[in-house]
Image: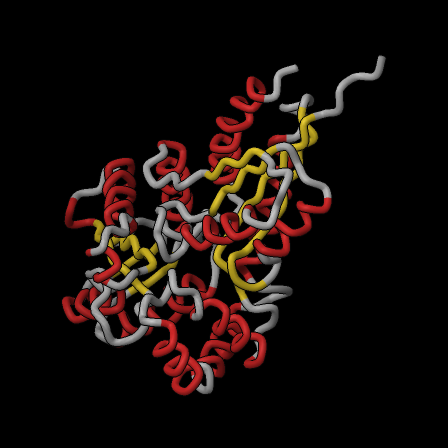
Length: 337
């Protein structure tokens, strides 16, 4: 009598996205896809498409492509990190679940490898269970929700559906806070402790928060928990929000405005990190590390340094594995036979 086939479980590690190349044409394709998502831009679609095609896509890709060229190595930093995270998570989980045929694959909401393509490939050899882990520590309708949208759209086209679980976020998970704290300790063991530690999170428009997006509140909780873990006083750290786009009000305080203020006050040293990013990318390596250093120092500030994202640090891989293990352990009961 032959033994039952192993339960097939596919884990999707998903991040936001990146252009295929640091060229104007590739950046234009990426921005058109990204900025056409109504989760990202809530202006009525017909009006926004006119603005996008006439006033943004003809001009912004050149500036953004130049920025990507400054941080691009063999590939986009975000894609390089994501692919490595997939390898490391698979390595961490392999052998722990012999009853499952376990796979870990990468996906991005925009660009490649795309979430739509990943789901369509799974349709050809459907797993019994899909676990989607969006690599956004703090849920937002502008970042996490588009992955829900992609899955919902795909579900409508399938007949034999798999089990599905989505890990919404992990903004206050103790292992996340400790991973962040350890990254700061490790950096400061070499570079010393600054006068100020700035925790800069990607921003969202204030009206989005007013309508119920919990992102900014989650960021504030992450920041406070991290400050507590590091034993920082109120004078030693601050929270801010970066990457605002357009003319409407965004969640405050703004990173660049705060750094300019600190520069004018003569703050002697600042270290900046971004607990919103699971992988270094354009917003961290170019905007935070380079642009904002210039903002701070040109205003009279002293030393400025960027503490890298968690990327593929062992503590980060352990956190992601822990989040997934909670789901996988439950599946042992679901698929018991």
